[in-house]
Amino acid sequence: MRCNVCGAQLDDGTKTCPYCGCATEGDGKQVTVYTASDASATESAGDNANATISPAFMTDSSVGREVGPSVGLKWAHFLGYFALWIGALANLANGIRLLNGSLYEEQGVTAEMVYAFWGNSLKYADKFYSVCLIILAVLAACGAVAILKYKAIAGTLVSAVYALNAISGIAYIAMTTHILGQSTLDPQTAVSIIVDIVFFCVNIFYFKKRKHIFVN
Figure 1 (tube, rainbow, N blue to C red):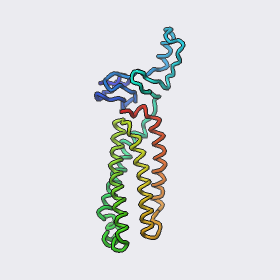
Figure 2 (tube, rainbow, N blue to C red):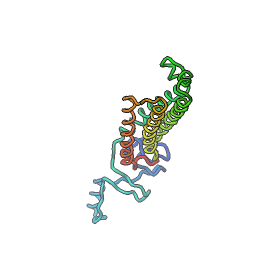
Figure 3 (cartoon, helix red, strand yellow):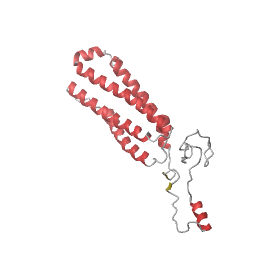
Figure 4 (cartoon, one colour):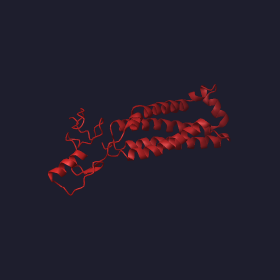
């Protein structure tokens, strides 16, 4: 099937054109989006002369779904094609390094030496955080795929990635600080947590304004 607005080739069943953002019914028939010129032509013909037509935001009664105004998708594409994948790879690598102890070996000691000195509590904290990082890597990859496929759950997945990243980081810092008896929070980690919180809020607002695009 092809998009009747921009003419792009689409897979059968696609509900939103990934190129122009125009909604379809998913069966090859294009959803009607009224424009100002349509309204003018209708009024000049004398049909529905008393009806008020807003080209900025309409409700398509044929599918019972709102068709919103054109909005940018640069941030979504940046997340879907780049940022989430980089984050997923970084979390996966760090999770594996922490899980197998190679993170300590890079600092000139072995995990066995560290755990022998600080006890199993640190070992369990490391295992907990490494598993969280691996889960976050999978979640980030799922979020990226959801964005590229214009899934309705995309915004929820992206927001969850940043929220859980911040929560797991704070939890790990709290545990290691308690175990070591001194703060393990460094400036880089603090900035990373703040950025995660900011991006969590930004993405909630961003995808809420584009819920008429992410509908598949």
